[in-house]
Image (cartoon, rainbow, N blue to C red; front, side):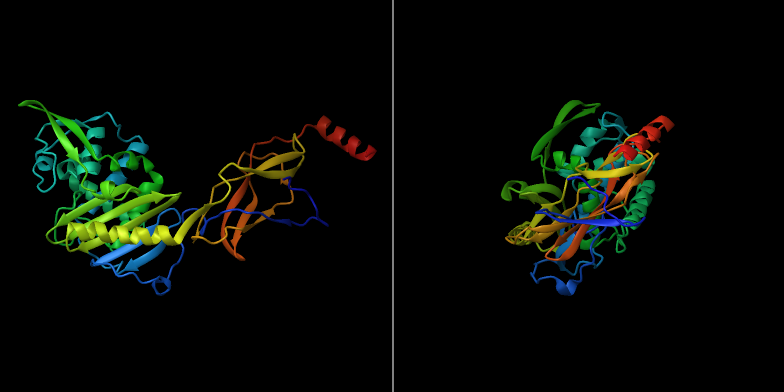
Length: 399
């Protein structure tokens, strides 16, 4: 489809066209405003619970979702987020060697039994954190990244504020019980969303059922088995992760993720009375989501939409493309017939860079806007030379 120039005078124009297409509920990563009063009721046997679709950030179910509660090892979602951010930023490398401190080796609870001065690769420590929730591995990585666990906890709390986790105070990197170490189901959904959307490589580890690492200590070389704490991997086929946790104070908690037919869900449970209830209630929530919603998608990023005239450019037209793919969460079983409206500038004046803004593409579902993406130029362009301009003027005159 070409975007043609149709105007009277020097004014912008709007080109409308209707197509069957899927879309998004929000711009970029903004979260839609959802009132708790508009959500359906689904009683969950836990102190707190929430079901979120993490691509759009839409909340589908919630129960007491903003109460600060101890999260146990679900804390490690933030620890994992900071680890993967450090890896992506090049601050640490997967193959670097980490030396375990006496402090890290002293962690109780779930652990991989690191010894002081033992060395492990970043990759193996990440496996130990994600798969078997090793407290010693989490603290070793925290010290490696920030120099100390206290320094890492400061990073955790700073990142929590950036994500809008207003009911969260972290006091350690592992989730071992400490007075005042709290978060909420909603806040866990926020950090889980950031982790899985920005660092989907985590699923390569969170879906491993069993693995092993090698201890290299003064006693010699010993293999140590890692077993995933998330039993949903065996009982719920759509499961992709993410993190379990339990202490006598927090009871049984989970941030569970699953994917089916392109729809991702994140179920948060805090304070379930026992492990079976924790997993069962997470399944109940995700079953509700998969039964009632579907994910529709707009044009993929870089899809060419048409052409715009170029003023004084080397070429007379430039291709325009979609900058970001957008998504829409829609009721399952309903039609996905959506309108697509294009609002473009009248022309682009050279010179300009690639990805110069050229308008927007707007999606509507049942008559209301559900998302939009910026339109940008598919290439850069310099100004036309004087001979090029003269030739165009002559051609235009003869026409």
